[in-house]
Length: 245
Image (cartoon, rainbow, N blue to C red; front, top):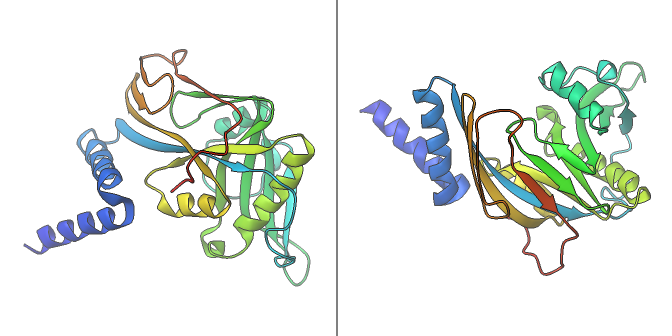
């Protein structure tokens, strides 16, 4: 009885956090993973874009947070667990990585507080089989990570402050990304930065097979080998788009 009550409470908490639709998708994802013992996975994405403009997001605060580029996978400081081959592939595609570090009082070793990756032209997704093709004035940001102890502080804003300066100098006016619909915290953080909604996509992967359903072209896709994947084309966004939520 107690276990049933706890299960119902978890369902109610998930629905409160994600809403009925995404809450149901999230439960389906967990059930699929449990039934297939991790052989299958369900991913549900929100595509967003936020305006790029130079200027301060921290209003002079966060000076102890240093943001510097990292030019090679072997130079990355210890951080989130990512396969080394994935990091190398990002650099091979031409990605830029900005690393946030907290300056200690003694100015010696700086602890990594977060990172942000940016890519121009096109981006090959590394969680599912998909490719994002971008107009010249767009960039793709991926894997924005902040150390758990620094979440709610200024690290996220400092990373974007520096990213905006770098991208604007390159002629970029919108930065696009995909966010898990199961991560409301990230959706909220991007919405605060002015992100707008570009559509959604749901992927189911099971062994070599992949199914995709999206609200933007190509809408439907089915594949069973690495060379087969949907391509999403993103162009300059009209101002009439709805804010991301």
